[in-house]
Amino acid sequence: MANAALRLRTLFEQLLGTPLPVRIRAWDGSQAGPPDAPALIVHNRRAVRRLLWKPGELGLARAWVSGDLDIEGDLYAALGLISGLVWERGEDARTLREALREPEVRSAVRGLIALAGPPLPPAPPPEEVRRARGHLHTKRSDKRAVSHHYDVGNDFYEVVLGPSMVYSCAYWESPESTLELAQRDKLELICRKLALTPGQRLLDVGCGWGSLAIHAAREHGVSVVGITLSQEQAAYARKRVAEEGLTDRIEIRVQDYRDVADGPFDAISSVGMAEHVGSERYLEYAEDLLRLLRPGGRLLNHQIARRPQHDESTYSLDGFIDAYVFPDGELAPLGDTVSLLERAGFEVRDVESIREHYALTLRRWVANLEAGWVRAVRLTSPGRARVWRLYMAACALAFERNRIGVNQVLAVRTPESGASGVPLRSRTWN
Image 1 (cartoon, rainbow, N blue to C red):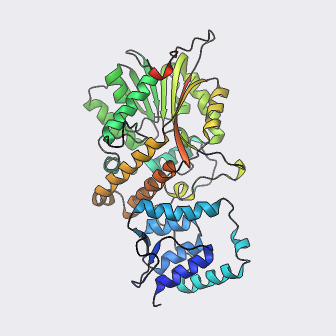
Image 2: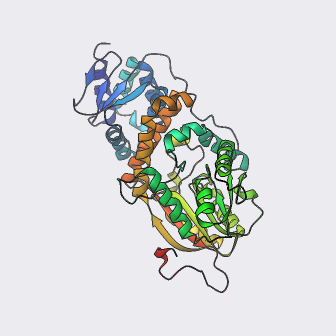
Image 3: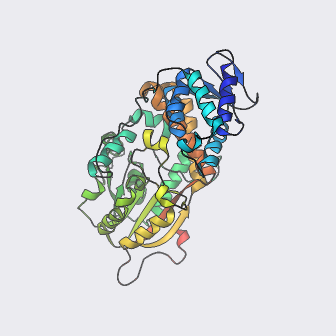
């Protein structure tokens, strides 16, 4: 069809009821839309079929991951424009059945079907999670979900994360700082909040590639047990520990937090792990960590939070992230997290929001991935690399726009005497 771009643009605007803020470039070379705007490149008719079969976010994600759809120009600007359409309409979204009652919508859908051609539907990209039946957040299902995300390959994570190999929000003195320095400052901040001193025992829940364990042992003289459900992470962390000469002070285990039985510990860190726990298990998680702490011991819980909704029963995780990035992951409002930690018996002593820090971190990870794109694709797959580029860029925008946040919650297993051990001016972290 001649000028497929103009036809697509006209039909999408008819369907959405609003002008498209991006330019469209179609498979026939035609273009339509603002000449200075980022371009949505529709490589083939299959991209349209994906959008028809799964209208909204998941269809867009499948088209992106498969390479049927691409963006030319500023990725962040394009995502901001596209997601703005989705979010603005998503607050009061109509069901497809309700929308199809409108003649304009029915006409647009018929036009897109004619333009897309048979067959329907295209198979999802192989990177999409294939759902297994059963309950969420059992030990088995959690291990499977963690493996999907973290066993992509240590070499791939080296490309994205850089030398620090820290996969959580860095702590920036200024946007001009380096990622490595900002991650080092984050590790030191955690150790200071936990008031680590030589000879203490630290449990690092979700220890990743061992960066916090190594920093705590080397700089603060503590003994560390680091646990992860990822075999690849554990192997990498053990190698790093050996290279640092810290095998006498750091033990890395492939172990579920529910199976740790050799407490008490003087301190516990949980950094970027609680998002995998799930709301139904969160109180159990908090109670397990309390049990593993000595009286007076501290917990540093570093966790992404979402904003509360008027109707919490309708909440669901971002469809793209659930299908391609963090299967079975759940984000909770900060207030829920604090309440459940208190119900478990913790005294919450400090909450620090570092939302803007995560936006800076994600932008640096995206830059790392783009700079090492050829190697990243070779180490995984084109689809997997595209998943990560989209996920990290979209999350950077979400943090910048205050749609999600990230918080460090310091909690204490306060003894019966009431002596928490936290300084009167706690922000000094002595």
